[in-house]
Amino acid sequence: DAGVIQSPRHEVTEMGQEVTLRCKPISGHDYLFWYRQTMMRGLELLIYFNNNVPIDDSGMPEDRFSAKMPNASFSTLKIQPSEPRDSAVYFCASSPGSGNTIYFGEGSWLTVV
Amino acid sequence: AQSVTQLGSHVSVSEGALVLLRCNYSSSVPPYLFWYVQYPNQGLQLLLKYTTGATLVKGINGFEAEFKKSETSFHLTKPSAHMSDAAEYFCAVPPGGGGNNLTFGKGTQLKLEL
Image 1 (cartoon, rainbow over the protein chains, first blue to last red):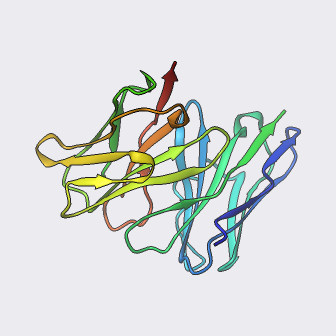
Image 2 (image 1 turned 45 degrees about the vertical axis):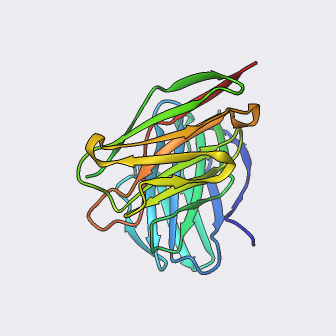
Image 3 (image 1 turned 60 degrees about the vertical axis):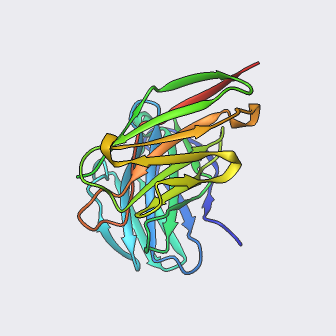
């Protein structure tokens, strides 16, 4: 079975540029999560969706970050404009809901220079 | 809100030795508790999951965890460490209030020594 698929796996961009991270959740999963991992702050929940609707975006750091889920099989996390402090690994994850088990993608490694 | 605390950001053991990684949850008994493992340059992978009822939970790769209500703990153990166990381990819990996400601990890096 295909797991959570993220793209790109690695991205290096210049400060001020727009970054778009993409995610395809596991088919049939009703929940989709975006997490950010850094050495300093560990694993942080940015936002999560249920049936394509944002449920909790309290972890989104600021207005430069936005996330969308136009359909059940696709989500994007956008950073505009990007800053060096946004450098991190961004994980997309999905869950069938019942039981809270979350399945992670391989991550998108973002470096902003 | 529920949270978990992982004691020790780094643990070193010799190959063949017992592995013990500590996790304590914050308040009321949670419906679920999780351990995830993250190998270098990879995403998090489910190691095992506690659900109400069974206090000793067996996971993949020979790991197990015991839920102890009296100690508010859910420590992860493995009798004999292998070099391939070197990774970062995360304890996680639902945040409470009906949320379907997970709150993760800070992680414990397990290092294997020859």
